[in-house]
Every structure is written in C-alpha cells, then in structure tokens.
Image (tube, rainbow over all chains, first blue to last red; front, side, top):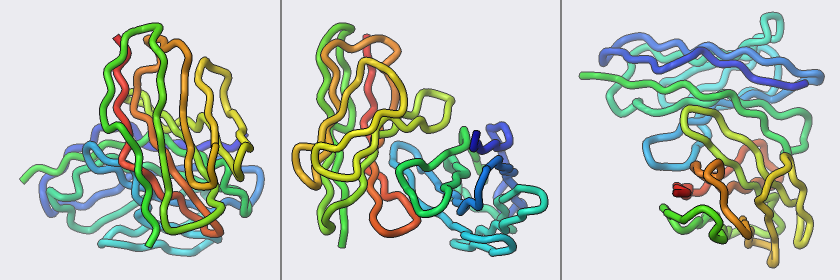
Length: 113
Length: 111
C-alpha cells in the first residue's frame, strides 16, 4: 500500500547548521508530496508541496524536490534557526481525493543557540 | 478568511467516561472534514473523514465515532473511553485544494 518513511529523530542541530530530513515514499499512482510542520502545542501547518516529478517546493528557506526516480522528497534548509524547532511531517496524496492524506511518522528537530 | 476552531485544548477523563470533541470551520462551505490522532512518539493516524453532512467514513475500527450534524461541524465521540484513547486529536478540513488546514488540537489524557 501507499506509505511514507522518514528518518528517525530527534535531530539536534546548532543554529546556522545545514538541515536535511530524509523522506521516501511508496505509491501506486502519481502522488502529490507535502511537508507539514508542527510547532509545540499546535496543529500542523503546510510548509511546502510539490505536485509532479522534478518540482521544487520552497517556503521560509526550506526546500524539497520531488524525485520520482528515487521516490524521495527530502527537506533541506541551508541555515536553521532556533525558531525552526518543531516536528516535521512528510505526506502524500494520490490524485485529487483528499480523503486520504498519508503522513510519515514525523521527525522532531531541535535547534540550539 | 477561513478558520478552524477545535475545543477543548486539553482534557483529562477517567476510563469508561464519555467523550465529545467539537470542531467547527468558518469561512467556507461544504468542506471535507477529518479527525486525526497523534499518539505520543508516533505519526498521524486518520480516524474519520466526511465529505458532507451525515456522511462519515471510518479508517480504523475502534470505540470512537464521529458525526457531522451541520455542514461545518464535526464531532468526535466515545461512549466509554479506554486508556489507549489517550493522544493528541486534530481536526482538519480541505476543499478544492491540495492541502489540509488543521485545528490547534486537543490533548486527551485518559486516566
């Protein structure tokens, strides 16, 4: 079945370090891919998305490229800040039916000054 | 603009007691509505979704139920809570777009 796998956390980085959070997926169709972020005590917010192969989603300095050949959608940021500390979820949907968004398990990121 | 309200923010309930969590959406009509659960250290699990009033689909068998009495109201219920029902419950909506809008969540502790 369709699934999303993320790197295990927690991830701890120093401020201004480079961030990569790996995400790979398994899907029978042609999924759209998303990164959501959850700040402490809050719900999830969409961070970025990509709807087809080779698309690059970007927002707030974060980027992820839809790699069909490796079925991956890794999240990157060149210089993290303390305010980026949160849990990051990779997710996918198939087609245009949004009754089933499949989330990865989440990766907790802590950025220390 | 659209907003989603979810309450209460925290809830502590004894085992065997009933549950009612409410979610309302403003600023849109006929949204798709969802209930997710996030257990400690785990990802998000879709519990229920609804594409219209009175239409509920369940993703997992459990002692929880959902209802949609009005277009923009979604309620999660239980007649008798179990310890395993503890978790962070998130309501979300979507409509004609490729993203979910989440509420702020309810932290449920069953003791």
